[in-house]
Length: 150
Image (cartoon, rainbow, N blue to C red):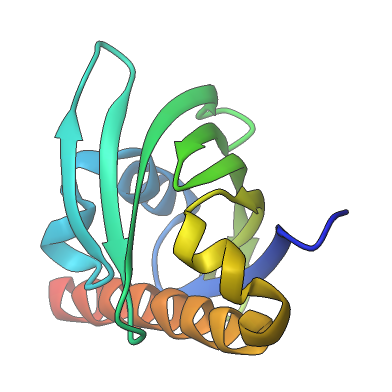
């Protein structure tokens, strides 16, 4: 791993059936309607979209997201990412006896945006915090929607 690579993992628990969670996470076009960090999603091809995300820090990332794995039986979603960041993102979804479901997230990317690359060695902890806040906001929004739907 070089100094511009970053590896994020996380776990979401939500009061949803695993199939419902898979459906929410598979529908990337709808992310901006519930996930505050997703500023926009624009379809650019049959299986590709351009995504703009941002969180607390004053920068946005723009990238293309191309599905690689969409397996509703195994409840796995994986996509290639290419743009200001490049690499892959993956969700593994399963049942959770206490919450309904658990979704595990893995992102392995190289930061390619020049301004962020310059700051990466010093600002890595801030970038990690920014990502954690973005993920927290998504889990919170999804859980609130699930609670309201009950």
